[in-house]
Image (cartoon, rainbow, N blue to C red; front, side, top):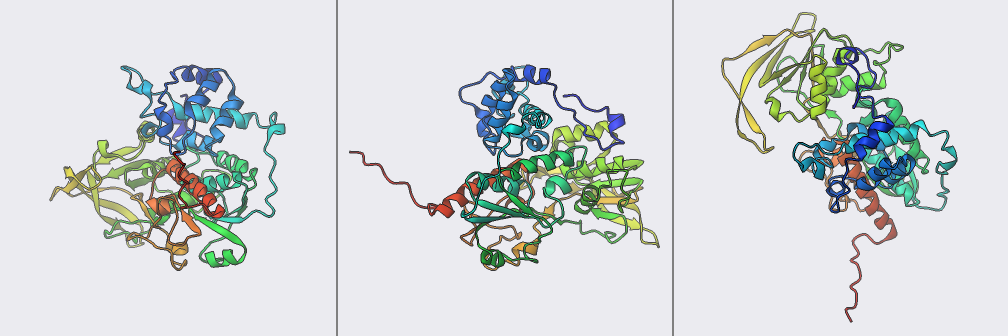
Length: 469
């Protein structure tokens, strides 16, 4: 897929990948052999009918292809950009198992169809969904407007319910808008995708921190009959090492939120965000890649990622890692920070790291990093961004009596996504811990289906046994 030149894009926030042309999409779609067992569908958490929409692309029926995708996925332009298809639908693609062949580029085709639909919205305006009348239907509250919440809300609206999303921040989209940089997922794409969900009848209230402004009990008193909690896992994690109190030590959560929601990526805004010249990012996931590449675009002279395991253990998507390498990000593998240094004014001046080696696999299945004593050395940095994970934010969960949490303060749910409170369901990172956008969407969709059963009084009722006679 075409993309900006690395030397150019490293200094702007325009989208890196440029998408397929119609001709390219058709040529790629032709590669799909329409196999009978369709493993790609089983590999998709929201079960998009992949072979069907790809066949429509080969026939240049792009409108029909988009409609087919939207039968199961309310956020196709987003999924086509940030979903790790390479470990889901594409990894089981039959074409990928043929010698000297690659899987069909399912994600890129999904993005093409969604972008084509957005580009032709006006001429297809007469086909837009009319906002339905939900008066008299049960009211359902969705807490959090990230991928899990938006998907759940969209599915519930399709069932005909009166759905309202309550979002704590002033922008809708959750991690899609505060956690993913503009160059990887443009804010305009998120806005337009969510506008499509609004057309299903979903209402959205921003600046509403459930657990502070309203409780679940308050919402019940307002007439809501069921609830979905999709508040994500946005509590930052810091290493327990000396020096984290210095100015210039930030969590990736704070850093990316400031850049994204306060528009530091837009030169028309004077955003109060630190802009280090020599930046170290700790971690090896997509958030670490996003933070490092953002720092480069904000003017850092040198950006390095410090990761305690090797290149083979990186949890980031291969594409994001390769983009970071091409843009000039340095990688310091098998290194673990031991202390952050600062000056009398309280600002970061450096970081001590130790060399590591890999031992036997740990509980994650990856080889455990082991310290090599006496290998300490210093990195010359003036900013340290910690991208080592996140935990559950307790604002909502700890203010909901009777809501059962596990030892890490994530919400416990059963196979129906139902919590210990019968009318409260949950999904996404607040249940699983930090995961992918598409897995959160899958949880939101599953929860909506079971919330519908709950509201209809059929959840948990066994199907009638047919009379064999």
